[in-house]
Amino acid sequence: MSILIIAEHDNQNLSAATLNTVTAASEIGKEINVLVVGHNCSNVSKQCSQIPNVKSILEANSEEYKNFVAENVSKLIIDLSKDYSHILAPSSTTGKNIMPRVAALLDVMQISDIIKVVDDETFQRPIYAGNALSTVKSNDKIKIITVRSTAFEASENTGGSAEIKSINGSGDTDLSKFLKSELSSSERPELTSAKIVISGGRGMQDGSNFGMLEKVADKLGAAVGASRAAVDAGFVPNDYQVGQTGKVVAPNLYIAVGISGAIQHLAGMKDSKVIVAINKDEDAPIFQVADYGVVTDLFDAVPELDSKIN
Amino acid sequence: MKILVPVKRVIDYNVKVRVKPDNSGVELANVKMAMNPFDEIAVEQALRIKEASHAEEVIAISIGPQESQDTIRTALAMGADRGILVKTEHDIEPLAVAKILKSIVEKENPELVILGKQAIDDDCNQTGQMLSAFLNWPQTTFVSNLELKDKNLLSVREVDGGLEHMECSLPAIVTVDLRLNEPRYASLPNIMKAKRKPLEEISPSDLGVDTSKRLEVLKVEDPPSREAGMILGSVDELVDKLKNEAKVI
Ligand SMILES: Cc1cc2nc3c(=O)[nH]c(=O)nc-3n(C[C@H](O)[C@H](O)[C@H](O)COP(=O)(O)OP(=O)(O)OC[C@H]3O[C@@H](n4cnc5c(N)ncnc54)[C@H](O)[C@@H]3O)c2cc1C
Ligand SMILES: Nc1ncnc2c1ncn2[C@@H]1O[C@H](COP(=O)(O)O)[C@@H](O)[C@H]1O
Image (tube, rainbow over all chains, first blue to last red; front, side, top):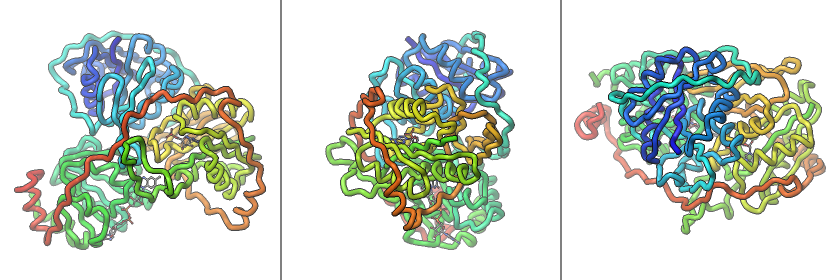
């Protein structure tokens, strides 16, 4: 029995999170196959075939998969499941949407958001916004798993030569209809895989003030994130949110500006290597996790930081 | 139509949880409990649909120990019409919760089930999707905007890349995200009124659902703690530390 990984992509490019998932699968230690389900997605299959350690790529290229509608994709995965002992997907909004359906229909309990592989049936995962880590052993016949990408290194993406097999789709379930998406476009690196992230909170006061953070981000090659309060206030779009219920990031450097450090925010960034906090309140909880803190007004500190990095 | 809203009793989101010394779980004794915040949003949405005359009845369901009836009472005080407590001794996993909800759906015949996107204790984010799969109903998850037009559900989902607009027909499963609405507070008179609203109590075995656990919890432990850092006197010092000590810029 082998492992099936559900590749995450936009029909053109493989997302970095898939490479982290491959590393998690390698730690389970069996033959790895990757499913590329999408529409006009052969580029993605080619990218997947370069990943060392991957045995073969299954490509299901069909109209009904264009927008990764959960009802359709999960049906296909179920049809393929009998050959596998483990099915893994990144713990992205796509993986979270699809995988529990697969688990339910196979009558198994999904293991969400794993951060460590102990052995092929035992995994560690965070609970309570990462305030506790739970080690669980699954006795189910097939393990349905989502993987927290920041907890595993990305695997190599060149040098492999997996064969690509084309497979048939399972048809349109006609349950949900995708109408359109409004995707944020940015030249900056993607939040969850950026090496440096600079995030703003309620202290930014206004969406336009995020321009200050963007200037610093562009000098550092960083992504820009935000707290829930900043998103709720409409300063920035929802996909900027870092935290328990937003995105989890673990860059080399995380700079929190005007963010108090609520547990729900910390849940999304406290595994960053170096944390910097800029906050005018010396008692803000963010300072308890920051490696470097500066107690000052952000409207002075951020422009100064901008002028002093090159 | 009827709307079903599953509401989970969890540790209040403001409480800092503590791991038990024997590593068997987290400390629940004498800890403030509350309704899962996402479920408050789900209740609020159901009430708004009812207030817009698109539904006649909102039913709150909780699965858990006897105390979970407090969570149901909270939903009733917000405005739900009646409650169902499915009483269990141990806490149960999303797979079993979804099976219990499926059999209640089959009894009650609602056209809409609105759940939270995730319970903030187990952080599983599974139950709604599982229920949808069991019922073979459409699912729309992580919803930040919802509109009901005749028997059609138009929704906006929060996804990693931005937003997605979806459409499906009823009956359907919806899981809600934080920005869908601001849940109301229950007024004192409504809290009093809620005490007289019907609250039925059943057990998983009444529904024929096996709730045995599939995941064995071997150990619950504290996450690695971060060492305390330093407060710097100036931005100059910060830039110097980042360049020369941490070497991250
Ligand atoms: C179910 C649930 C899920 C949640 N999920 C998330 C999540 O995923 N992510 C998340 O971030 N939050 C989440 N939250 C919200 C979280 O609890 C906090 O409310 C939120 O993180 C606060 O955001 P903030 O730090 O920007 O705002 P505040 O707590 O208001 O902090 C603002 C900070 O800015 C500082 N400040 C103000 N002006 C200045 C200035 N001029 N210069 C310097 N500093 C200044 C203040 O001192 C303060 O510390 C969730 C909450 C719930 C209930
Ligand atoms: N024990 C429970 N009782 C009632 N509702 C629940 C229970 N467990 C999960 N739910 C519902 O399912 C949602 C998602 O939970 P989870 O899949 O555990 O993250 C919650 O927000 C609730 O709406």
